[in-house]
Image: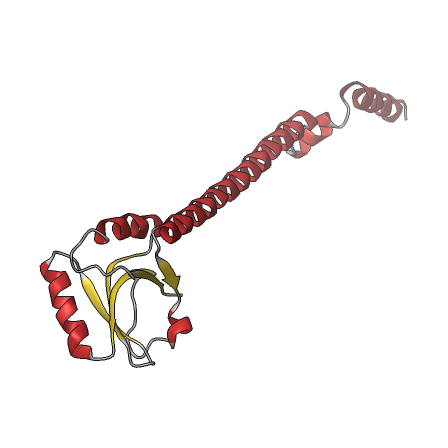
Length: 172
């Protein structure tokens, strides 16, 4: 009985002096210091993830601002930006890019093909785009980047085949 009482007193003192960490170590569990370290690590990870989301939003906001500035620049060049649905929709042509600079629109396909040949001879890659309303347009400088289209539009405006009413087709 005395042995049990002595062991009980020793265990009580051990718990008072060392806390639960002694039992955690015996059980193979993390101590309070290790748990605190892990909590600090998780907090740092969450803060880094939050900062990455904020940075990503800033990049998107900057791209949006750049796109709006580019659209304003295109409008200042007296360029029009149109979606295919606003002019009757595409007939059968599947477009691979988002933006095309349109340098000609014809009801007779042969006229569009002639301009396409002229554009290709000038060193541009051209695409013949058919609309449901019967028009065939010649699109060049195809791109998915609006800034690139803006730069191309400035260059194309100086070409002899470029009409004054050149416009940008937005394939959405």
